[in-house]
Length: 380
Image: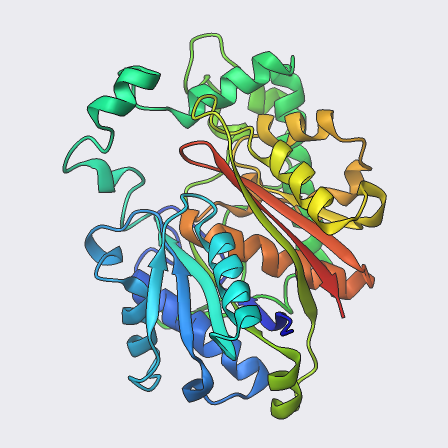
């Protein structure tokens, strides 16, 4: 039976809203990481059987199957197809799952997976501007209000009894860990610098140094009067893209390339549409059960920091050394370019595994509509 192995993983630096990457069309940002990921292994793009690309706001510059547009923008042969996936924030993590499944099934010998979101150019929620995406039967079941993730984050804080101070402390830790990773040069191996308007952009734009509980405490609650969720303890609105090259061991040997990791386990779950963001908890349990591994077997966890309450609630359910959770910071510090975030997290986790010789890593993230993916990688 085929396996699915990752032979390269790269990402663009993550730009903050209206920052260094805001002038880059999302198809061109995607093309940049496509070029970079095949350059890492020296493979001819004609060998790529498909590109599976996550993107959430598929409207305007991000519509017309941006995966295919990115392939052509990268100068790849027109024989290389592309398809675009929407599983909300988990879109590019789901792209990894689809690509790995295709390789294992023998449908592909090699596939590039990843995603993009330019939230500066295509604002979050703009895809819903043309009409209400929720029909009458949904409303009859769940109520008339469109699900609000921020309100869901507040509900999670209430359910797990997480204080405003705990959320703010988590946010400070995210920034501190990301800054430490920058200072140690840990992101250099995963970031593919990009030239924008004649300047090289090679670092994430959202990391803040020197923050304090006092400064965060001054921020107003964003979703509920007297609430705990603020712009300071939630993920940043960002621009970014990431890509991984997935193949099988036989093809990697033919290319003369050493695989980095194996896609060991891949699962997806549904969870209540409100509070919407609890899915990583059952997804983690499902991944561990399917893999036959225990929490103690996992050397690093990436739990997406959509809001600080999400990984804190996850941590409350699992007895895990918090030094293993988002060790290089997360979306609160680095940013959350929706459709590209799953591949960004996986790229960061994989490079951390390589640097630390960590055998198993588990990634999970909450997703709009009440869903979550979980993936376990095994270092090779």
